[in-house]
Length: 297
Length: 300
Image 1 (cartoon, chains in turn green, cyan):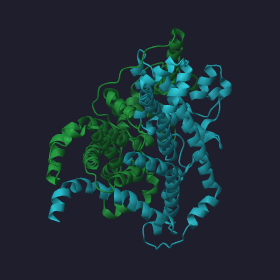
Image 2 (cartoon, rainbow over the protein chains, first blue to last red):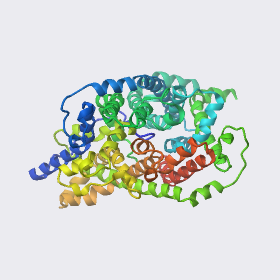
Image 3 (cartoon, rainbow over the protein chains, first blue to last red):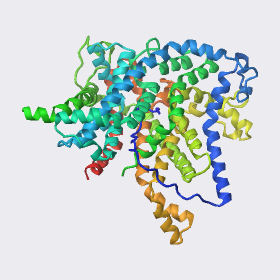
Image 4 (tube, rainbow over the protein chains, first blue to last red):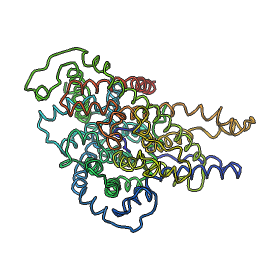
């Protein structure tokens, strides 16, 4: 998900009994038509994947326009080795960036979400809305002063800057997910402890934190994917020599005078593998988080 | 005071770091950015603080709006957002509708439709640049070649190299990546319609189509609103895809987010900040009503 620089509010459902499935139905021809349309969609979605895979295994001489859509004449790993040589170090840096920033922003979001859902201080909802706005903030509108501030404070360019930025600008979405999660947890579960200050801290540590593990999984996936896929901050706060894999990949694909699509497509696959693996392995959480979310009226 | 600390010390301590960070990095910097956008900070010497900048009011905003270049960016932004929004909503809605009722392999299909979301715009840009190659005829590759092979060669076009409509081609990969997300939203919406409602309508003799049109679709309005806000705000911020498929200097695909980067690279911080502020204002028109409405529904 990007995918999407800051994308979307995804609420995590509290454990609840699954809803009964709607009745199976439809006439046989309607069902066949439905399957046909679904399969057409699948083909359309997978076309770019087909191109990526076949091109990444094609040798230099195999790249003519006439054979653009054909399978490789001879399968070769040459592009993959070259892409790995070009991207390897930056993949390492992406890991160094993503792990701390994901964990720190999840912890901050969990604390915020817990406090905002339990502590109804006057203006709590306004504070929450003000935090949420950060999720939709076009970062272009703070970029110039942000560069100057990090320069003045002396945060080094490259991974350290990016960790800080992903933590700070991850706060809104992680706060939202945890707050909605804690809201959906039956209050009796949490309010057993006394609600003075110290009690709150104890409750948080012993009851809320273990309870929030499903929300943690969703937040970690979300933040990991966002930070791994980020390009905007990478362009402004790092260089191909000290930046993450997205920057190195863009450099590999667009930097060379003569674009070698075989290498850049192998590189694109390499750079996407971590998020794809997470998505496929944890797709249930991924989907559950997305599906239950955002449907509040 | 002591009682206050005892009661509110812990929660304050938990939430304060985030509040300070958001306060400084979002609201503080927005303020500084507005200030910078209203100065004559157009040179590298001023950008680094070696020379002073003077306050010029709204001059930069007006100058930007008066240049054909920036107006072209705004026009591109409108075209891109319209294409992206309509494409992703239509595709996502149809997919959700198709998968709304249980079918064999339904979950697998959902997973396939949604997977492009896990890929970065930069990585998908690599393959889409190849797919959207503007060569036609003999030297065509990418989608143009595919069209020839399928016997629909008349569909061949220069894609993002068209001066006026090229930006709409860049919306294709954006649609490809986000339709699955819209599908997930609508699926959740479909599942949120109580079965009793459908049953009741059927009992009253409504046809299957009428059940959808009169009972189910109206229930999806809140989901539609969320989807519009999410997709539109992403669209307005689009930068990665354009940079990886086209380039920062390409006139036909420039949008404000790209202009902001180009100005910054030329050490024209005042104009860079002003373009950023334009984006903020455009997005605020979309987001503020949405946030206010969400806020109201929470406090209700």
